Image 1 (spheres, rainbow, N blue to C red):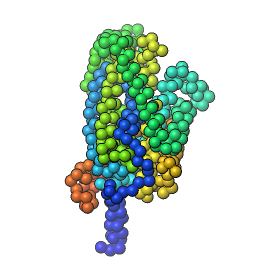
Image 2 (cartoon, one colour):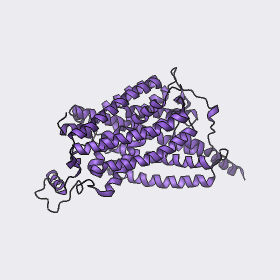
Image 3 (tube, rainbow, N blue to C red):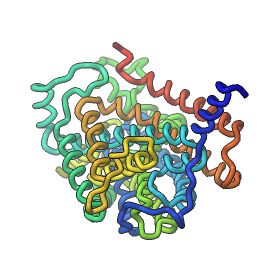
Image 4 (cartoon, rainbow, N blue to C red):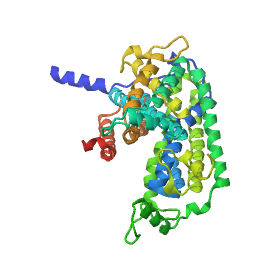
Length: 459
């Protein structure tokens, strides 16, 4: 080969360079202080967020109706399979970094770089969605005082942007970022308190459904839905009118609605991957991480199943408030935040891992005297604050659906490679090519579908 050919080969070899990993010889800059209980609290707290407080209303009203409980069941099964991938890889590679680390060890540096940036973007969006969800729920409880004031005095009337800057959500991110910068041990304690409060509230909602719920809300007739459509559209007759809310019954939108709802509900389970970003801060990562992933997913499924059943029993699904369904159902029957913390905790760990490997600025991997990645934490929060202030919630949700699929696909591929390719062999060119083609086909299909939904294309 000539000089140019050798340079090209050297460049390609550098892109496919894999990270050597030996748990017995890997040191750590972090304090190993987290237990299985801490990780379960992190997983449950990270997962029980927007899915239970917002998506339950959106899916029940517009996609599945009362059959949302089946949508959550399908989504949970898919999530458990994905969780098992993460569980096995986390026991093999008990180090900080999650899918970024797995792709670096199995696929090489270029895929690690792409995966790492994908995860960082997804975490930033997830933080913004969680903060906006908290803000929306609190605003609904106080009579929409904040939204009315900011819409009047700070309106941002542009496609893709939020109607107004969400100052309350931004403040939440800043407060929790300060807490996390203080130390992971203290943050874990606060996270357990928040998660316990969250679960108690959800248990209260489920118990309330047995007291105030009505089984007939699961079997609403098509005639009732036609009358509701007539009232909403100010029609004088229901002749030749199609219901906006399906055909009634337990399956108002049919099998298609259940599957569409399951695809949306899958987003509600993505928080479990946050557990794998804390590998170096866990006392017994090989045991605690896989166990906590499975326990977290089971707890979250039971919570989602119970709450979605409660929501549709207590209030007709067509009357649900898609922005904040839970406060609305208590108003209807006459009875007048841990997810965010988990996302903010996880993102700096990926930033730290990439900086330590030289794929981000080295100063991002500095830790303070309490062994907390304070620089990475503050830097991560800065991007989330910008998104929270400016970008519309629907646009954020549609965008994160693009990024969620990528790391899950990569993790499944990494598991296959680490199982069947000897540890001292780099991935074959054919393997890398197949990985690239399959991943791009899947991602481009999903990306085009999601991007077509964004209002920004109306400009």
